[in-house]
Length: 155
Image (tube, rainbow, N blue to C red; front, side):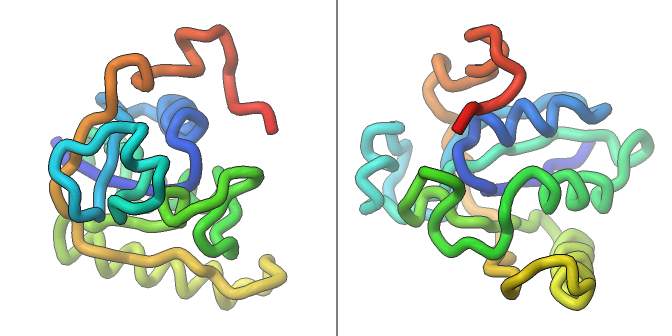
């Protein structure tokens, strides 16, 4: 089993997007800030430094990390800085948190390839950072869209 962590805006839609893949599990939470065990309310103040993230558990024999990266790039606008759609603040920044050197290298190559592809009108703003403590979000956020009968966020 392996772990991958991505920030791509509101974690509800990102979680649902990754659940479309052949993964073991996905959980929403917070990473990258300075507050221990933050709450959603605290993260929304944009003062904790945390990002809304999805942590994906997967079997590398079943699905490649590069496939997860492809899904990540496709599920949001990686050229936006500290926002996605109507959501604004550093908690919505685009970031790949790597868990080992192989992930760091793959993420960097993937980002460079996207930037050089000419498919985007602006440079990729996504950061690639070492993974930190994953703070699982409150239970009502887990599988939020599934619980509310929606396949994706409506904006």
